[in-house]
Image 1 (cartoon, rainbow, N blue to C red):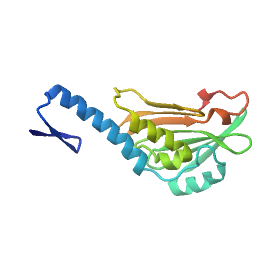
Image 2 (image 1 turned 180 degrees about the vertical axis):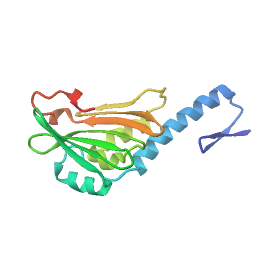
Image 3 (image 1 turned 120 degrees about the vertical axis):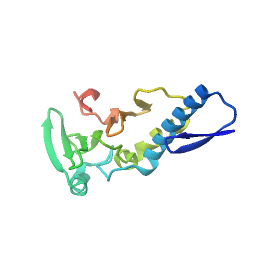
Image 4 (image 1 turned 45 degrees about the vertical axis):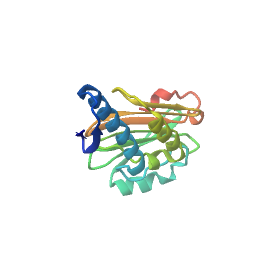
Length: 175
């Protein structure tokens, strides 16, 4: 019986061949990473998906970032850039509801804060996932789409609620 170290996570090898142990470690790292991200998060609160944009100014103050408001045809976006290089973009309907969020950062943001009640399907999908090989982590639920990917110091992702998209605005704007 040997002990295999997987990026700080210990597992016991019970006579499993080295190639299978490697795959097990990779799967364990990915699943553990996603669950850790969902439960702990690494960044402060942002406007919550599906809620009103009134919290954007608090987010900007908390991040100590610059909030740049850009008006587009059929929606507004708030692009908050923090001194540590994180960029969070919040997409807002003319009625003031956040219909989408995207991020590029050296860390993965706190999904509970970013997605609010929409974090539950992401958490469930991460727990149910039995095997994943590279590429982005994608969740499509009833009225919710989530895509996240990247690597150490270069994470990116987006999430949106199709039913909240303004008229004549496609989901491709949420990038």
